Image (cartoon, rainbow, N blue to C red):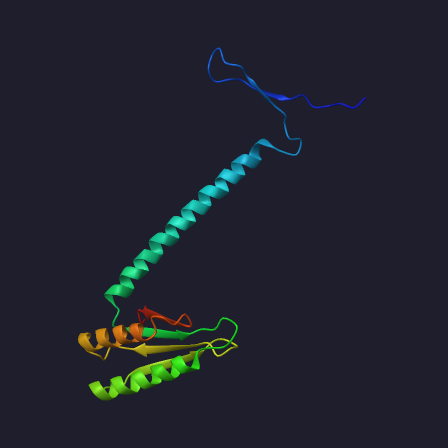
Length: 155
């Protein structure tokens, strides 16, 4: 004869109602549920802090949007859009000529398929020139999913 464990009886919370009989999982321990709840709590706190931090960064980048504009040429397995890169070069040359400015740019190659970031430093531009540059670049690549535009605060 094998011994079987007795089922755990959980008393009903209201008088007059029946009590539930639940079989106890032999591998479970009372602390496993507490650990899971603790993990969920920690996860929720982490997500909340991440959301707060990212919203603060968005506010900072909006208030200091004149500092830099990053144009990222990305790839999804077939290389970057080289025609889009030529469009950017042509636009920048015309912008510099029109406004008689020379934009400082930092080029960073980071991928194996030609992925590249072009960071344009805009602090030397007037607010009007800065706004025009950013808006025109955004319009130029608004329908291109291989070109990402972002603004960064320069350290």
